[in-house]
Image 1: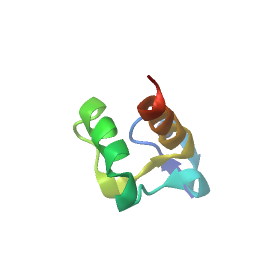
Image 2: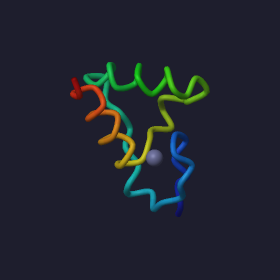
Image 3: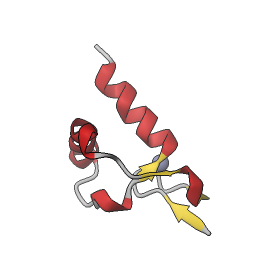
Image 4: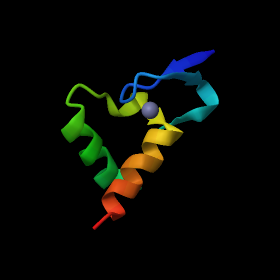
Length: 59
Ligand SMILES: [Zn+2]
């Protein structure tokens, strides 16, 4: 079964889907800012999760 990442629109296996935990609410905020239509429970792909996580840590 495939999953289409809502933030990068790439199709990938469902195993690469990440549901962002409540402890990472700051990451959800960054994603929501760029993608206002994003639905939290849909999650993002692992790559986007890492990308937004890194973006938060960037100076
Ligand atoms: Zn993605």
